[in-house]
Structure formats: structure tokens, C-alpha cells
Image 1 (spheres, rainbow, N blue to C red):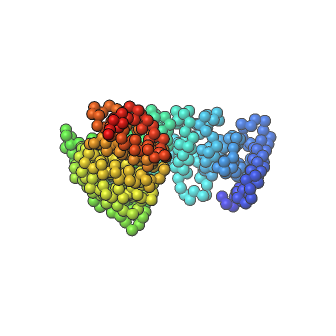
Image 2: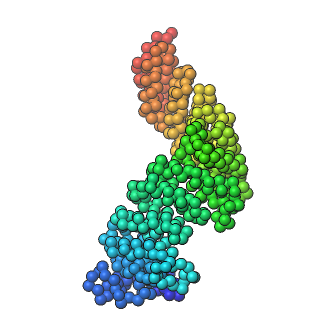
Image 3: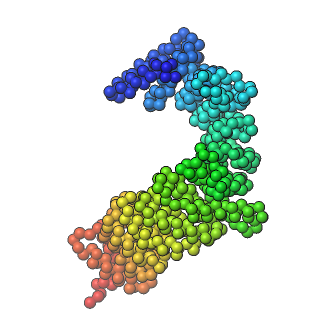
Length: 543
């Protein structure tokens, strides 16, 4: 193509060498005017294609329009020439046509109705019936396969409702047909996922599940990866329709984790078998939190439950930090998805897996790598919400408090969330006091969240309401601007409704001292105004 489209190369060079945005814009306008004249020469209707253009000229001008569009300029003509290229029987022309079709036209464009039949023909073409003439650049490849792939990519990119209704049956046929090559199946699965996201009720789950089951038995890992992307999209909308596919998913996961030699070399990523597929498999299983419940399970179900538990256990025990950051990232991505699966199972999963996950997360929240520490804190917060996990989380309280002082604010947020979750009546006073002490040094971006969480914890776990009042007054003195009205309103409500007068007297005396200085925060004045107005006599009557 480099030797053929010299005019395109020169045009791109002119734009790259432009010294200002205005110069670039002027060059683009001149080129658009030139292309418009070439397309319109001898035509009375702008929606017609100019048959006097050679194949080389048509491709060159369309490539220029595509490049101009990619730069952000509006291109509102040339659609007829694009459709002509798509309808061509030459692959070199059809390729340019489909690329331009994906970028320059939308599904609601009236001209799309003129091309639907051509797209259908390309989708349903077979090795024996295809008359597509491949160019020398294909290197002996299957031109029919490429035409189908181009059509599928264009449908996914355009994705108009009219186009979806007209072509979704052909897309599904490409996905499930035995004659389809792995390349076509991969693109068909991702195309159908795009269509389902636009039109959720496009696929009937229970009728389509057997076809997915057939695809999950494919030996090609690329097909399996694309199929799992589609399956996750479908299961997120109607999980019950695809529950029957769990054994297939567990089998694939077992092959990748327990029998690593079964993975072909091209899908090994730093000696890790297809990590992206493993992650998709684990994500799918998270839609079914009761999948490992052995009660009322038949022998076949118990067999795959045992296999799944052994797979997750192996991921937990054999994942470690590697010298290669790429391998470490891939392995830890799988590990954290496995931990998320354990969190989803809650009490239906084995206790040893929850304990193993907690121990492993405790290790990760103390490493220097901020990404791993962030994920460790976030996942431990999820695990801590499972009943019975509280004692295991408390063992790492000191480490979490250290993370609260991390340089990365995102890590500090996750540490704050975890402290909030692990707090109970035994450690509440210690955690609240630590948070109040840290509030002095906290960034403004996290202060409001900290103040709110401290107020909630102080009220929820206060064994002595005088400590609660003191805590809120500390919040006001340290960060009064971030103490919202509901927080101090709640203090007033608790003090007012307390059945014994000792709390009212204590609050009035404390607030009198708090507002005695010439300068104090406005929120403190508001609280004092109400409390002293109502219960000031309790202080005034003191000797």
C-alpha cells in the first residue's frame, strides 16, 4: 500500500508538518474540497457513486476521509463511495470499505439499508461458495474468513437498532456454525456481546445456553476467551439461564490451573496459562454464590464442586510475588478474582479457603507495591463483612493503621474503609482515637469521609455518651468545615433525649469551655447555642 497511495502519504506528511492548528485546518479544508469535486464530477445526485473513479483513486480518497475523521474533523460526504467499496468483490477494496463504514456511518443513517444485504452475504459466505477475489497481500489466507471478520467488526462498531434486528440472526449463525473458523467465532462472540449490550433481550437465554455449552468444548483458547466474554455479559443480565454451564467452566478452569501443560505456548503469558481466560472464568462463577453448596447436590455436582475447591485452593497456595512484574501482575489478578469468588461464597464455601484468603491478604497489605496493597485492602474489606471473619481481620489492625498514612490517597481510602468495617465494640475506642489523631494530618480530599465515618463509629459503639460528645467536639475543633449539619444535629438529639440529666450537664459544661475562646468554629457555636440555651441552667446553678 505504501507504493500505491503516495498521495495519502504526502497528505499525512503535510498535516504532521503543519506549524499551527489553523494551518492544519486549512490543509484539511482544501483536501475535502478536492475530494468532494472528484466524487461529484459528472453526477447529478450526491448519493450516487462516481463510476469514473478508478479503484486506486476511490481507495485513496476514502482513506483520506477516514484519516481526516480520526483527526476530529467532520466528514459528511463520500458515503456512496464507501458503500461501493463494501460491495466490491476485491478484498483490498472491501477492507477499505468496511473500515470507513465503521467510522463514517452510523446505524441510523438512511444509506445503511442499501448495504444490509451485502453484509449478510459476507457473513454467510463459505469457502466453497465465496467468489471474493483476494489480493496478493493476503499471503494465501482465506479471503472468505477475512470478509466475514470485517463484516462482524463493522456490525459491532455501528450497532444501530435497525442493523441489529436485521443481522443478529446471521451473527449468531456465524458463532455456532461448525464451518466457522476460530477467527470468525472469536469475532462473532464479541460482536454478539456488543449487540446484546445495546439490545438486552436479543438472545433467549435458555435456548441459547446449549450453543454456549458447545462453544465451551472448543479446544481453541481464543474461542474460549471470546465465548467467556459473551457468557459473562449474558449471565450478568439473566444468571439463572446459564447456571447449567458451571460444570463446563469449572472443567476449563481445572485444565488451566491443575494441568498447565495443556495450554498451548501462544497462550502462555510469562509461564501463566491464559490469565485473561482464567479471570473471565472466575468472574462467571461469582454470579452463582451457592454453586459450592453440597446440600442436596448429586454425585456429579459434588465432583465438580470438589474440583472447583481444589482449583481455588491451588491458586491461593501457589501464587507468589515474582521477579517479573508482568508475571506478578497476571498471577495476582487471578488470585484476587479467586479471593472475590471466596467472598461471594460466604458461609457456603469451605472455612479453610476463607482462612487462607485472610492470611494471604494480610501478607499483601504489608508489601511495598501500592497496587497490590490497594487490592489487598479492598478485598479484605469485602472478606471482613462475612460473619465470623472479624477476629481474623483484627490481627492486621496495626498494618491497616500504617496504610492510613500511605503517600497514595487511594490506598488511604481503602485503609479507611477497612478500619470502618473491622470496627466493633472491642476496638472501637482505639480505632476512633487513631482516626481522630490522623485527621489533623489528613488531606482535604479525604477529610469529609473520615469525619463522617468517625461520627458513625463513635455513635454506634459508644459505651459512654460523654466520650461520644467529646469525640464530635474534637472533630469540630480539628475539621469543623467538614462536619455536616446531620452530624451535629445528631449530637443535639442524643443529648436532648437522654433520660438522665448528667449528660446534659456534662455537654453544657464542655461546650461552655469550647466556645469561651475569642475564636471558635461556627459549628461549635451552633451546637453550644442550642445546648446552652436548653440546659445552661444546669451549669449556672453550679457553685
